[in-house]
Image (cartoon, rainbow, N blue to C red; front, side, top):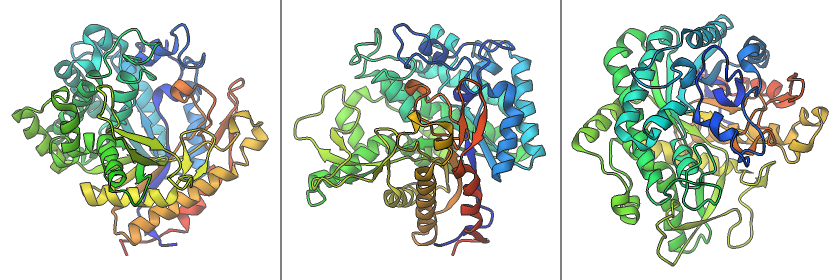
Length: 483
């Protein structure tokens, strides 16, 4: 297979609430996920992140795993409420939280591992949500997030040179405020939800997140970039969609429209400085908040200085058009999402979770489409899977993980083809995840980790995939520039 650049960065990724635990230690404030995980009746399969992987106390052990696996880089997130327990721009800072991340960063650097920091991976301080609705207040949320980002730049930016503002704003907006399946669980179509408006709230939250990417990016450019010499981007999730009937123009349009609702919603403003995709404006009308002239000025400014596109990719689907008009609660672009096409051919090989199929060929198409459309260097900031039946496996069976090995190999091969043959600028790859952990509303069932975690003893056991990834990349990183 084609090679990758010699300076290609690869490693593993995690998120604070999924692994840290220690939710009540050293003055950390509650996040919306602390609240959501303790709702009755449970909406997270009876699980929570109170202990999780206990990474807060075992981080040195976990960083030793990164060394053992040969990782060059590590992507982790900072818990906003560990830094500012009440979250707001006038609220006090907690030095103990800053000290923890300083130790983590210094320990990575001592091992020769490059830190990649995500500022927001879904864990909004509960106090902000209580104070003014959190992301539902476009003005207040972006100002509070900007101040939080400033503290992180000031305290960590002398050593952290790679910043991701937000992780998967689509998931935050849709699962948090349309379906209600994630914190804060707002929805008007979910019978478990007591508050929310699926027709309006996700689009408000979407604008809050877009502007909350732009403001810290502008701040970094204005006050920190020259002295710190770092990079800044965003991580967007999104599947690749093929038409359910490849011969039907309506399905071809549906596939592209679905990707615009999934990716273009955020990528058009943050990567191009443009308005939302036309198809979104046509379907949603005034429910889609408009950007002001000053918003556009900020988006245009920050889009030109955005250093990279972080891509979180797991799977692909088929899109089938719908003949009837879209309902006011539709957030997909008036399409059906299917895992088999008109001929009954599945999109890929099933994994250990219902929504994820292994689709390396479509991963290549996705990489190439995103690069050609948005023109930013790509870092794959998440990619991974649970093995079929892994949630029921013993430790011994789980660590064999032949499906995961094949998934990684096939997707890395697809990445190298997009780089070498399609001329996509792809500069890094982070496997999800370093550890088996709390998979949000799915609890501790699906195991995405390359390290088996015994949730009773918290013992870590490397899976075979973790030990083989270095070899996969070593075979490819043999050239200095694109071929």
